[in-house]
Image 1 (cartoon, rainbow, N blue to C red):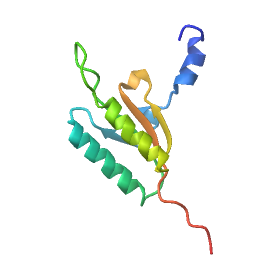
Image 2: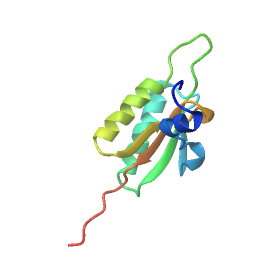
Image 3: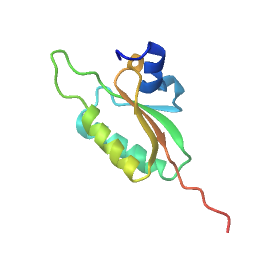
Image 4: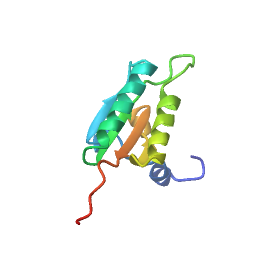
Length: 113
């Protein structure tokens, strides 16, 4: 980022990555259908458990360009955020590779009756 010192640029980019996550969903090497099914399964299971932080890893773009899972997986994650299944969604820092850092909402707490 040309107008920020590197320290402040890192703060804007976010520094939470794979080492900060409680779990890692590694979708590297998976085809689109398998990756989407794995993500949907994780989101569905998260509705019944406690909140959790997950790093989702994706393959980098192939040499010479080409399609990655970043956009389709990102769309599913944005939809889940709109539905309240995800509290926090951001990309992984560059040193962790392509992917997302996701804080799952988990099962809603019941208020005492």
